[in-house]
Image 1 (cartoon, one colour):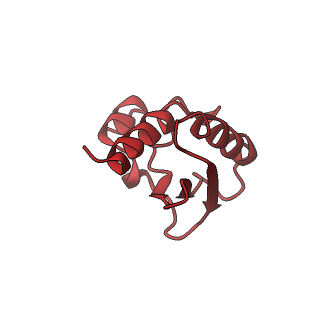
Image 2: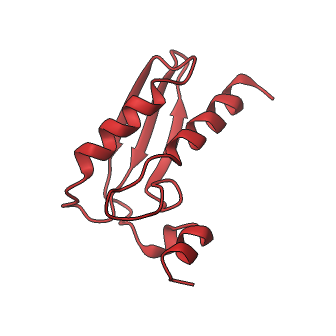
Length: 104
C-alpha cells in the first residue's frame, strides 16, 4: 500500500475518534467530513461541515481534529475549512450512524 493510502487510513481512523459532545456518533460517520487531502508538504487539508451553521461545538471539534491529526507520523500541519455547501442532511450519515441514532 502506498504512503498516501496508509496515511489516509490513519486520518480516517483518527477522525472516527472525534465526537460532537451532543451526538453519540463520530464526525466521520455523521458525514461531516466532505474531503481529505494530503499535500506534498504533508499538510492535511479537510473540508467539513456542521450539523447546523450555529453549532456551539464548532471550535471544540476543530481543535480536537487538529490535535488528534497532528499526532499522526508524517503530518506536519492540519488545515480545516468549514463549508456549508452542500448543506448537511441526515442522508449523509453512514448506515451505522443512522442505526445508532434510530433513523433506520
